[in-house]
Length: 357
Ligand code: NAD
Ligand code: DAU
Image (cartoon, rainbow, N blue to C red; front, side, top):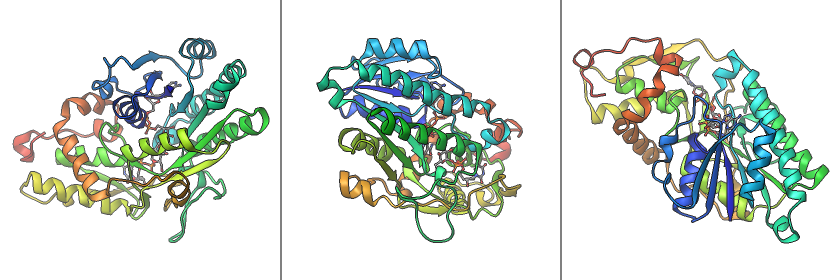
């Protein structure tokens, strides 16, 4: 199997590449533009592996993608490249429209030409897996869960751009017969996540005894899934999913944001006790505009049809993730200057804060 992974230098894409090369013995070409949220150091464990290659390219660059497809001759496209941070989409939606919509369109068009030129046997094996999000379905009330039949109701520029991409992917299957599959996954967590997202941001802030900015009431709920479980799910969909279908993927680990931040504080207090418990660092700040109240995923289709289920439980997964950030300052420190919430705050000296990193 020859895989082409877009966005493989990002958080989930790098976990997918590590899984494909390390566990599945697949041949992988990682195509990534290397935007602010990427980090090739997340791929150090496989960078010299004979089955792994990297090329820097923008999915909006038609010529580059045509040439990559011609040379690499992939069997499976795993499309993860995207602008992914909701807060950034609120302050500037243009790159989201560009990469998530125009980039996906460019990839679909170039893959359609490439697919048309394949032999019947290679055509039968070819798959285009589009990696999307549960945010396209909007916000849930206190009960219920999203599934493959949930109506599209995106509320942020990010989720609207992902919804547009999902619709393009669907149309390229129905109109042109491109063998596409789409996944809609809930919030991921784990090592190598860019420190603007809730869990790494709060972990690093709490380690350094900095303020922990919780939006609104802190009662918004997310359904957390370990990134390695997501990588395994994507492989299951690529290998055994039904062409033209969508798969909802979730962790059955609903927590409100305050619960998550308090758990991070408590775990760090056990590792590195200080003068005061870290919960006192929590600050309720202005809410995110259009903040979705609750996400939850009913994963019964992928469990039933593809025998996938999450292997990590949230408590131990979170604890291991905190350990990873605790020991990986050299990975996350260079990223902090592009994270607004951190860049705007003075860092206390270790003697003032009584803490390690
Ligand atoms: P990320 O921001 O960590 O990584 C995105 C990667 O895409 C980066 O390496 C970046 O350089 C690359 N990229 C951006 N624009 C590009 C372009 N024009 N051409 C080529 N590469 C480009 O994101 P992530 O959290 O790893 O998310 C990966 C995918 O999974 C996204 O499509 C996202 O919508 C989806 N998703 C994420 C989550 C989550 O919780 N993080 C949940 C569900 C779905
Ligand atoms: O649901 C899947 C989506 O999860 C993905 O499609 C997105 O790419 C990914 O970024 C993520 O979106 P969220 O907006 O849910 O993730 P984020 O980490 O930004 O925020 C999680 C929750 O925490 C959300 O309710 C907002 C809140 N939050 C976030 C930050 C950064 C805070 O309260 N304070 C913060 O500083």
